[in-house]
Image 1: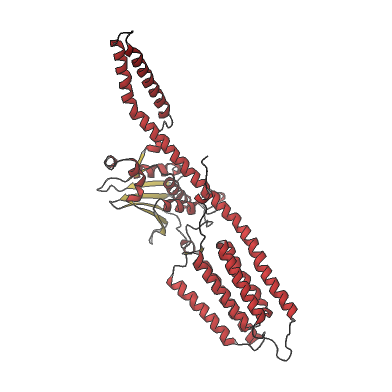
Image 2 (image 1 turned 60 degrees about the horizontal axis):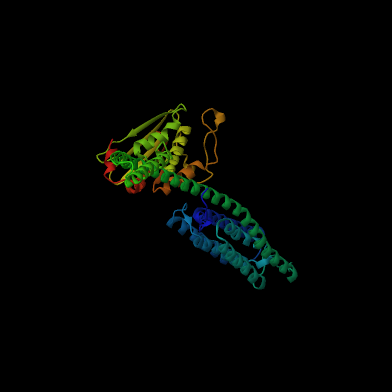
Length: 448
């Protein structure tokens, strides 16, 4: 097992989707509006309604601008996510200032943004937001407007009680955030373990490739060593046994023979020769398709012969797994047929995998490729092979994108039905490993 440095696979930063924060902000705005309506019209308490509505309106405008200007599914960097969560805390502090400060029971909502930070942001960001929320709570303890209440029977809470509320908020922020952080850290460790396993596989594959190169070198060196052994034997026969050169020639022949034996052992390190085999695109597709031909679904492979040489790459486990997993999903959902089409030109390499199943549901389309999103049919219904956790497409997409591919999901245009997955590489990225190992002239031999 190759030694691993944790820095090799631990993620330097964590990201949260903009859509997640926007959903929470919209939920908070609706809750705040409902609370104002109940207090102002249901309980008929007197408080500054217009300033409160102004804060909520500004928050809603920020939400609209973010939703229109950016893709909600994009992942925010830690600084941007922390800034939005800090804005949530500031908006809540402003509303609490207008409605009684810590006397307001909604003051415990300071916990929300800090808990989100504990699950999705680095430790320093979580601590910074916790300190900011605590500072807002302390300021509200000393300065705030009166709590909305019946003016004929005003509610007066003792300072000791408010100090207890402040202390409980601060402790809740600290203890609950620490607990949440510990729980999510376990999930992060699992993710790091998966990354470490992937790194080990990658390094082992690299070592296997070195074995293959050694075997190739042994094969190439075999001929000149055979020539040396043959010539040394002939020279031994022409030199008298008592000649001083006889012993040297015998030593030369023995050492050359020993080199041949050593190279013979090396050549068996990888008898199959797979790690240094080139894989044309058509061969790669056929190898990915082969395991899925025995499930009652007709898999049709179409290779478009172009006017340029067929793209060639070295055997790549990430591409084989990624294409194979997408094929497996297509077979699971197909009714009768799965089509695999491939074509290329001087700049790009494309693979399209389509089926004649129900297609991708609209509510899944925007989230396709996210982890733990699964709608695979269960084996119990007699149609699918097995249910899953929804990690297969996520892992396949991640591995393919790491090879330089762009993966897109869609449906066939009406009246056809079924899903279509397109995988597109820049040709230079697809052929990168082959170019490192072989000359461009040898790539001409891969023309179909």
